[in-house]
Length: 419
Image (tube, rainbow, N blue to C red; front, side):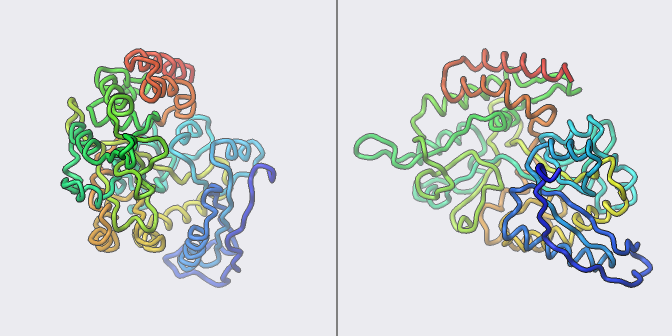
């Protein structure tokens, strides 16, 4: 087990001995072990974990929290379950959460949710509720919200005499017009500043599919529906930007701030230093769509089925998701990374104040509220087997989009029907 899980204790605080106040259940001298991913071993995250632990101990005297870090993916939790050495709480990705639940690794949380009003499902952004439950059984509590979006340089847009408001990028036609107007060509005929940085992954395609009124899965989840005429049109539009319109030069990225003006990225791509020039917009509406949309995902806290003390585990989750702690976490990370999955977060003072000074926050609530879920049923297999056909069509131009999507759908359905 030690070869698989890198155990890093963020805090080793001494339990506060004594009697908890009457309204708080005491878990004297007990420790909650929480798994995050190794990607979270950053200075800011470590500092936040310490702050959270202090707050948690005030709420639950006698308890402490130990954060440990594992590789991303379902394997560490599967191995830990088989070995009888699971954590009390674990972070699980939307990419494989449902798979783990179906494999019997995670505990149903309905009873806990029903008695904890601030984590009832109606408190969360609608799309965040899709990844964490099946047939009415809740197996995860949303930890974050992220989504695909159009990121763009406000200063470049103004220089080109274009409207910088997110609503100006409302349609595919508008996106293409902006991309062409923003592209700069050097004296030698090469692109010196790209107008638009495209992408060709399955999640990018899913964003354009949704913005064109399509669906990824059939309603029952037993088959895919992305090879509809709406999906074909989305793939054709993506391919046309990459192959027909000279708006991009390889190696240019909007995140550089100088060599590309727009790009298809996800909302958590923001960094310190972006707050002056970066803006965001939802994925623009396609010809058959009803409004700008995009693809979103929400990772989640879970309690393993074999966790020894689920009541103790739940104290961690419900405290993490308290509105006060969500706001405090946002401020801790500089007030520039809104990832809280709670609907009310976008009405809290911290976000409202930040949105007045950070341009890209103007459209964030719209991006999250109107987005639809990424592929979350057998996502790993779908991304590794059918997705390359999409790459061939959109990126390389070696397959006709309809043929590529039909073949991708055939492969994806074989994966879904084999479950």
